[in-house]
Amino acid sequence: MHRPTVLSLVAAIALFAGATICVSPTARADDVVYRIVNKHSGQCLEVFSSSTANGATVDQWTCNHTATQQWFLVDHGLGDYGDSISLVNANSGKCLEVYYSSLANGAKVDQWTCNGTATQTWLKGYGSDGYYGLTNLNSWKVLEVFSSSTAKGAKVDQWTSNNTATQRWSIVRD
Image (tube, rainbow, N blue to C red; front, side):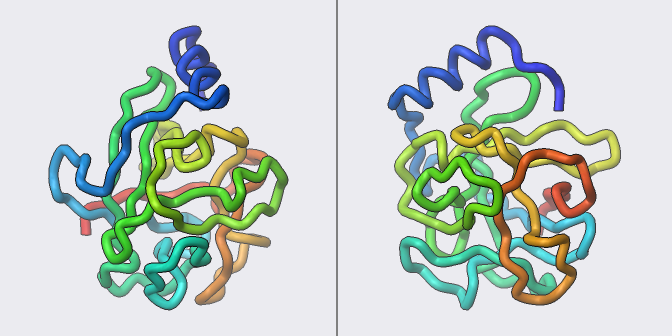
């Protein structure tokens, strides 16, 4: 990940201090859906059991092109060292977030009604190999597959960046 600029840090501080970004499941530039695929496992990010409930766990599963594995990217345009986005699940219309805005390594990643907070905002760091790190704006930790698992149903959490394949994701049109 590149170093933040003053402008992007000011935006991040404003978000952390309680300012919100307007986000809604319908606030998309287009209706393109994406698959988010883990580099290490080759599996897709999904909401467990196609749940539409707040707090539903996010895991990985063999890519199957269902709505629970499809995500809309809502671009916030905050900063030039990575795109600031929200990831909205196509099945539930809810945003990917870190549960209870946790700052801890290993904190659960789930879905919740979009509210524009920093815990639902992700910085898509640029990857020269076609894979991206997704850093949570609240915790500054990255999205990863727990314990580098390659198993179907393995949970997704957040962890301090170590730039391993389990923390890298491709974002492709579905």
